[in-house]
Image (cartoon, rainbow, N blue to C red; front, side):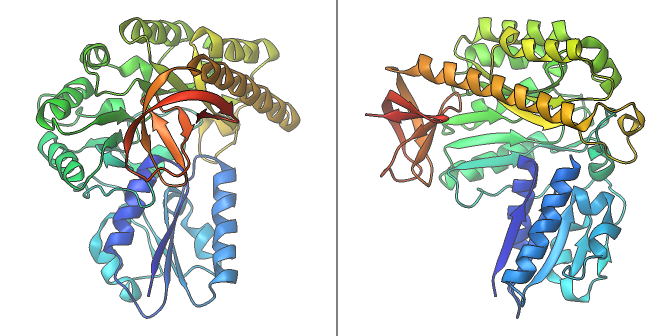
Amino acid sequence: MSVQTITFGCRLNLVESEAMRAAAPQGDRPLVIVNTCAVTSEAMRQARQAIRRVAREQPEARIAVTGCGAQIQPATFAAMPEVSHVIGNAEKRRAITWAELDASPRVNVGAIRAGAFDAAHVVEGRTRAFVEIQNGCDHRCTFCIIPYGRGESRSATLPDILARVAALVDAGAKDIALTGVDLTSWGGDLAGGPKLGALVRAILREVPALNRLRLSSIDCIEADDDLLDAFAREERLMPHLHLSLQAGDDLILKRMKRRHSRADAIAFCGDVRERRPDIVFGADFIAGFPTETADMFARTLDLVEECGLTHLHVFPFSPREGTPAARMPRVPADVVRERARQLRDRGAAALQAHLQKQLGARLEVLSERGGFSRAKDFTLVKTPDVQAGELLEITAAGVDGGALTIA
């Protein structure tokens, strides 16, 4: 019978879902693996909602719940009668967990520890691939519960990463993104302490057939000089960076226990843009963090323009039990929602301005399923009737929603 995955949260979860789907044997009953996210209470609510929906629509299926939500709050999912198994983040990475699922405990959640990195897989339904190079996080931002679900930072070795990238390229992947929980911490636990920039240069040097290399979300304050230089010199390193900024006010950043200041973020974007003028930035923001005043929020809004951001991921503050921020004085819920709306509107306006600037330009795009393609800077382009997996040159002729159109 079939094995299906439902994935919430980060790109790393996408990679892990593919590994689980490949490891789970075909059984007598369908198996649905729900890979949860614990970043916000809303993500947890959506996971529970999905579980109930699966149980209604596929009453014969077994439902196994895993991911950060299951690791941090196993009892929450164990209490749901629809759930067959609750599996921790360490256990989900072991093939034996899935091979012996029926014989394993209903709740199989242990401590997070370092372990072997599973091979990456091309994500089903996409033409891009993701390679996990790092897991866990050694930082303790006051709002974040993820280190408790992922454990300490640990890195895949350079030879293993090169082998996986080469295998994916041999399998037809044209666009590969390096992913992890705290990407810029890659190498800190390896001999010699190599940095992310050295890894990027090694991949591009050792896998010349790779068309496009990307990075997932990074911490601007930890970007090393070699990485910045790679953006200036390596055309196959795509001109798109997603930054974990979270706020634009220094006092809020301090209360978040972030390691960068407002000035650091602005200087970083300016430095990279000087080296790579076609760079496009995205960023994560939290709206309505505890103690945030109207003036503090205004500085976050202003940062969108000052950093030249294009793609925003906006999260209304969501208190997570066990984090310091959950004990801080709250901003009223209606104010949080309104600030999130304003940030999203500011991001939507920035995206529209970016799209308008592209009109008439010749762009190289990589086609995906569903009639869409991605430009080098990750701009979405509508390309109907184009087979997935094609690199092609197009002329941006119009704008439709959040995407470019072609003639």
